[in-house]
Image (cartoon, rainbow, N blue to C red; front, side, top):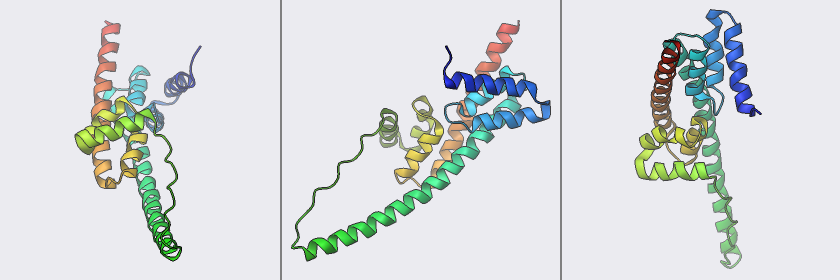
Length: 187
């Protein structure tokens, strides 16, 4: 029995093998934009589908980077709006409390964080943005990592730089491994 992710990967492999050679990198880029497939997975799909490893790697990186850039830019705008709203709400509450005799109201409880997000925040605290970006693909897709970093207040340029470095490094590692495995199987 296959999972939806297995079906998605098999679908991308089948599609890449069926389209003309010049269009295959686009299919791999599209796969790289999908969370959990990412640049690494899409590049491996490309290598297995017969694309040159460098072409598969570059296509996977581009797809993943485009998606992560969109997430970072949208996430940054959402964070800016949320911070501005929080400031306005805090100012209104402060005025109301002063007018109501200074009676404090208990804050609403926060939603519990997922295990992966907690891990990324721990890595962010311990290793900074570079370490969190490089280690996070072990726990979460780069899309989620980028969103978590931006939501934590990390400047979007810094997030994009380190996500790009992480995507290139992880994709290169997977391409090298996939190419080596294919070469070993073929011989």
